[in-house]
Length: 296
Image (cartoon, rainbow, N blue to C red):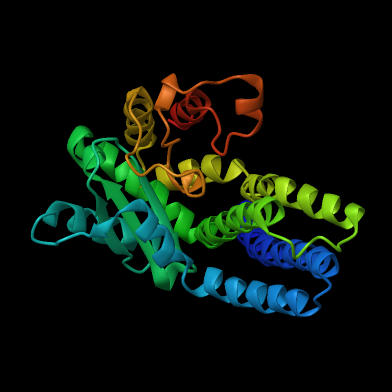
């Protein structure tokens, strides 16, 4: 219990840290651009932009994540069994009922989003609801509720927006350097090189933001989810079936990949080289299944 409490507190601290890092990165980029172009208003513009985006990432990142995934509100008359299951599980987890969404995709997967337990949402793919047995779907649902209860969703959802925005700013900077016209003729060559370097390194910063989301969150959510259902085998079996699916989500996105219960880019057939393993946002599925079955 103490481990979960510490995890929740750490997630809140990490969220504010990520938002601060985002502010610092944009201020550095804005400083060098303002020096390159001799226009201090560029720095002020970047500061205002970063503050606005931090607010957006906190208050609206869940809606952005849902939109990016292509999820639609789940109709209760179409999925009454899912609503009944979620009502039972939320009572067991002592959580309010989240908003439910469905993603029209054959790949079995799911994710939770939102800034807190009172503003949470859970999305399931049709593939998951159709391919998995009832006890397996319950295991996945409990895992996502565990993310909500453990406050993983705050940092996961904020990272979606911040990582995506850093990548967009990087793309803008690279285009500005090479297609900016004559406005930069009088800029200092060293400042220009620094600006280009920052533009190229920005996507790496976005990746580091995603990596700040510890992979241990999945192990903890697996264990908490198994405690909610009192059936570790249900989630273990679900993870095996999800991992065995070779296809990927139609709207798989690197900015949102860390939110899903499993890598949305291809399951067990996804490449697992050294660098790929180093930058994985999820722990190995085999290890997760082994630990769950060790709880029985």
